[in-house]
Image (cartoon, rainbow, N blue to C red; front, side):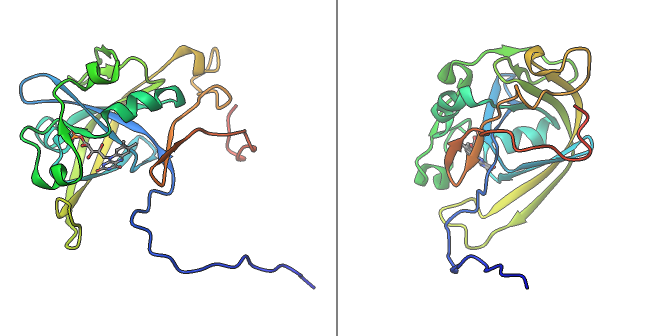
Length: 212
Ligand SMILES: Cc1cc2nc3c(=O)[nH]c(=O)nc-3n(C[C@H](O)[C@H](O)[C@H](O)COP(=O)(O)O)c2cc1C
């Protein structure tokens, strides 16, 4: 007979549900031609599409709606400090009341603030972030806005955006030589887990579909 005993569990009411997703630094073009960086982590990928979730009312959202393109720059573990320097800022000027109430200030040049470097993209106007090991140039294929009535202080809505990846740039040292594959042993993504930054830990195995 199976002697398995399920772990004890309790019902909780956490304030957020960031259960651990990679940190993405989204570069978008501002109306004046300068570049904004939006740190985020609510993203998932399927085929050549990436779906992202962003609070409505931020600068990155406004830029995505206007320009219909961006670069998804995947942060690595060593970019934790740079990411956190940008964390309390927004490209919005003036800062919306709900953002100010959440402790945000305006920052026009997030590259300088974070000590990051811009490099030109191939297919979109927003530049890539040189330090990020994976950079996905993308165009916006869908934007849906959804209300959240009890989000306080909050913008009252979030945006789901579907992006089609047009071009993938990878640092050479994370690519298996002579192939199109990322080397999982050398790629060290930064994760956002219940408002803490964590790394990837030890390798645990691979799925039957792994190609390397
Ligand atoms: C590690 C990290 C992950 C974040 N993830 C998200 C997210 O998934 N969605 C979101 O709307 N905001 C997220 N934020 C908050 C945004 O970065 C914040 O709203 C910022 O002001 C957006 O900048 P912008 O207004 O210049 O676009 C995250 C912040 C950090 C530091």
